[in-house]
Image 1 (cartoon, one colour):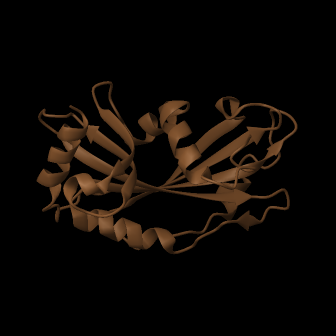
Image 2 (spheres, helix red, strand yellow):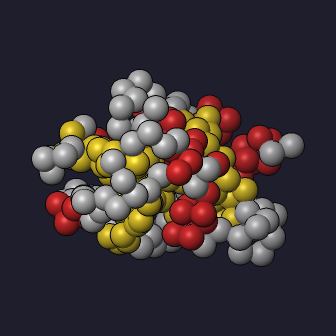
Length: 192
């Protein structure tokens, strides 16, 4: 089953697969080292807030240069005619603002464009999603990265034809991170 065909829990499935099967993609764009910790669907309840964070990176845990990174993930689909489906233009801005207010050192928005699976390994729409992409992020500090997932029919997602990314905007440090200590305590508790 492909992300493109899976209508239930597709964002969760893609997020889990990116962190497990295609972890190199996340490690590359966030410069994650071998000692850094990655969490998927981290429950905000552990630091007193409702909801979850799609991807959390705890960089240099307990060491100099320690930082906490929150990633909001959204998924949209590019059909064979070159039109986007499930394009929620503004939904991410509310979640990003909440993450910034909660005290994360860095906040990122990952938007995944999933292309309708092709018959062969070469995908005719290999970069079409990037060319048509026009979403923006209201935040001044949030990093904004777009990924395009090109799948191949009759192959498992672990053999996605290609996953490429484009950095729209790098993240800046969050100077208003008053809740940082609660987040780090929650990560320590979750990592015990």
